[in-house]
Length: 364
Ligand SMILES: [Zn+2]
Image: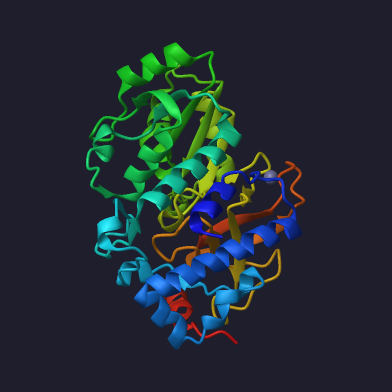
């Protein structure tokens, strides 16, 4: 099958309906096709698979046979499977200060797939109609459209699913009370979306509201969608339960959903269900590996997450070894009714562990 045919078929797949066997039967062949494509077109990727004796994963029979590309290599190398002239967008990871950001090169096809698949995943949560959207960030974040930070990309990506986009913060990250009050006035009784990065929602928005407790700012029918990691909040010792409880209290919003995703796999995000579990959609999957041996951990055991996505065609990001730790809670059995694997993300690897992880390329 050509990528054109595959991409057409991908968009017909049901989001969360296939149980294990059916999903693997569809997923693995496309994953192999991606590996073959990147080996053929990306010199660095081919070299890596050759020196680590991993070329056998061109014909993988299961997820665990697919080479886990350490995510930090996107910071160290130019990993790209298309000609420069076909790159339509370059996405950058946020990167901690001083570190090189990862660069992700998108061609038209991959960019289009990202948008389509993200739309399908989002509509499973928000419905098909565009809802009014309060963006918990400042307008300056999206001004530089040439180089996409994860935050810029997130806001621009998600804002396509909203209407009457309203920024809740000023460019100095203080609350724009006028904009906020008018949004709350208008949409108090309507379904709407509140979207933002987890730490910005908490530090610059919820805490500011908590200090003032403005009774006018209530959005009882909103869905609050947030992502981007808990690291900064864990430093402040905020638990997920507290996060949800305070939002319900100050904003009157009981529906709070976290999402998990990597800039390296934009589009195939993992949404949190009402049970508090991240779910793989039909276009993504997850494995947990021991950070030292890279052996696959059984469900319930904590290790480093390897994430799979069928979207990346213009760069070898279809099977990446993240620096996040977590565990698979189950597969096909979540009480919410969605099929597929569901998991938790429990933190980040420590620096020393990452080094070990990146060194352990060779499969046994
Ligand atoms: Zn669930």
